[in-house]
Length: 285
Image 1: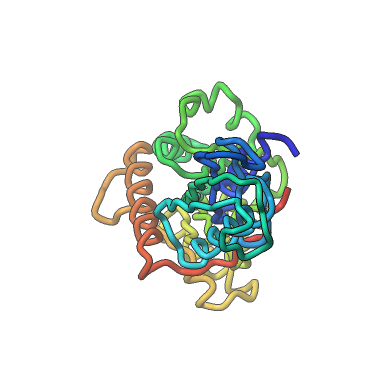
Image 2 (image 1 turned 120 degrees about the vertical axis):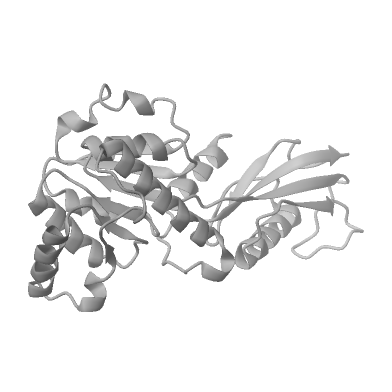
């Protein structure tokens, strides 16, 4: 076990949009199995690193999982006495000290995948990169994802993931985290159609947006219906995307409109009364 195991776990949970709790040993009085500053991460089905084992750690895990079950967003402090005369739940731990733990819920941030890094896609990525999200950029054209092309994202607040897929970019759809918002805006209508087909076959996605004209959508609806998709499945695709009352066809204007539309979706997700439950993937290494 490495000291940085907890940090890797935090990043893994964030990328996969799985909730967790960061547990920190904030103070030690007397003797304790670990020194102040020790950390561990708790998810619903596993843990990473350690704050000392025994009753102390079992209490921390139990409380952390209760916070996860209730959807808590506020940090909590827990005090534990490491004495054989203290009340215990999971075995005696008689180091003789007293410790305090800080339990901090790890936020599940929004996830967006932009398929197509053309003029609009790049402008949209620039805007979204300034927000605390996980941002997936996908294009079948290698030159659209070169470092020089994406230099404007060097100071991104978002976690940026670049997917270079010269063939079958629709395979990326199945690899995206649960609850990802997908935007289809590639250079190729055939590629767009394949992506729409893959997206509505995937139940783990949030919104699915398609850029294009009404004529394009009429053709796509007919094609998707011919491929066996139900009207309800096809209706999962939103087109046009963006704010309907914001006119303009310039790439920067379209990008602002789509970004605002997404921010509204993020706000709805953050409201408990409107939050939907997506099937979360198992946390992988």
